[in-house]
Length: 69
Image (cartoon, rainbow, N blue to C red; front, top):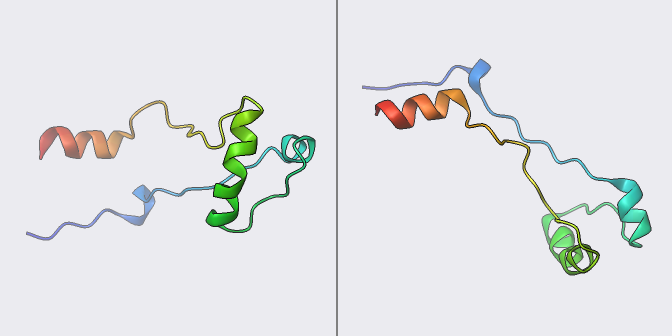
């Protein structure tokens, strides 16, 4: 059996940055993941989370799939 998730159910990921905070910390928007990793110590030392995810609730489709298959 082959299954396909319709494109309308595809998950999109975006990265947003608080540029005012970056400026306050003397940092620039990272262009690569490696650049972001080098900024982590400075961001954490200032008492902030370097990365957070705004997905408190479980995605309905993946929850349905995990529960039923």
